[in-house]
Image 1 (cartoon, rainbow, N blue to C red):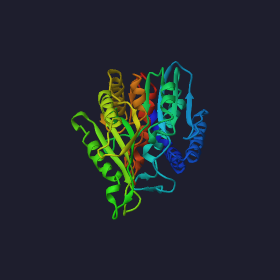
Image 2 (cartoon, helix red, strand yellow; image 1 turned 90 degrees about the vertical axis):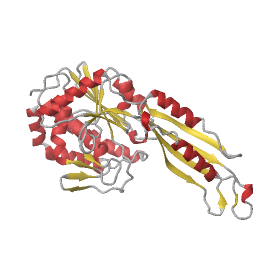
Image 3 (cartoon, rainbow, N blue to C red; image 1 turned 180 degrees about the vertical axis):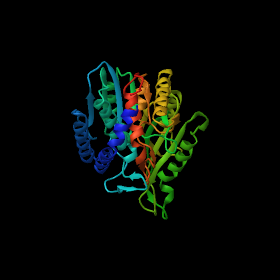
Image 4 (cartoon, one colour; image 1 turned 90 degrees about the horizontal axis):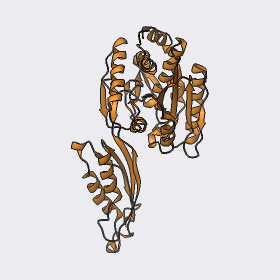
Length: 379
C-alpha cells in the first residue's frame, strides 16, 4: 500500500482541485438542471482520470443517474455515491481555511466521489486491476430518499462481491459505518373547517388543534430501547391569526433498526385517526430504506479495512449510525457492504460542513486497497 499512498500524496493538489470543481457545481436535489450540470462535471472527471464514459439513466423529475464501468474482469466491486446535496444554490460559500475545505456537499459526499475516482486511478496506474471490474453507481436523489434510483442501484449492484460506499466517515473518529437505520418519510395533511376566530369560532374545526394532538401521538411512538425514532420535522397550518385554521401539514421522519419495527411504525402512521370530530386526514409516504445490518461477510470486509488502515498508519473501527444511505439497499440484497469510506470531516447537513484536507491521500488509499479485493495489499 505504500506505493499507492505515495502516488496519491504526489497528486494531492490535483485531487483537491477535482473536489473543488465538483463542489462548485452546486446540485440541490430538487433542481434537475443544476444536478445534471454537476453530473456533467462528474462525467468529465471520470473521462479525464479514468478514461471511461457514463451510461446515463435519464430521469424526468430528478437528475440523471450515472454508471461508470472500469475493467472487464469477473470480480465485480460496486462503488456507491450520490452527487445531489441538501443546499440551495448560493446558500453556502466555498472556502479553504485551517486545513479544511468548506462548501455545499463537500463532505456529503462530493469529496468521497472524487476520492473513489482517484483510488481507481492509483490502481490503474500501478496495473493492479487485472481481473477486476469496478462499477461506480452515482445517484442524483439520495438526499430525498432515492425515490428514482433505488431500483436502478439494486439492479446494477447484483452480482457484486462487495459494495463500497463513499459516504463520509463518522465525524470525530473517522470510523467506518457497518450498520445503519432504515429510514422513512411521511406526510400528514389535515383538513378542518374555517371560521371567524372571534365571531363564530364554534362553527370551525381547527386543523392546528388536531395537528397538536397528532404531533404528541407521533412522538409517543419513539422507542429508544429498540433504536426507533419518530420525528415531526415540519409542522405548519393556518393562514390568518383571526381564522380557525382549516389546513395543516406534518412532515414525519422515521428511523428503525429492524424490519419488524419498520412494519410497526408504518402501520401506526398509516392508521392514524382524527382526534376531533369532523377532521379529515390524508396520509402518504413509506419506509423508503431498509435497515443496513452487519453480516458475517461484511464483518470480514470490515476486518480487511482495519488491516489496510494499519498498513497506512491509522486506525479505524466499525460503527452503527442513525442515518441511512444507498448502502442500505445493497446490504438488503445480501451483498457485503461497507460504508463511510469517503472523506473525513464534520458538519453533514450543517453550515460548517467541511472535509479535512490532510486525510485525503490516506483515506483514498484505503478505498484503493479495498477495491483490490482479496489481494495481500503489500504493494
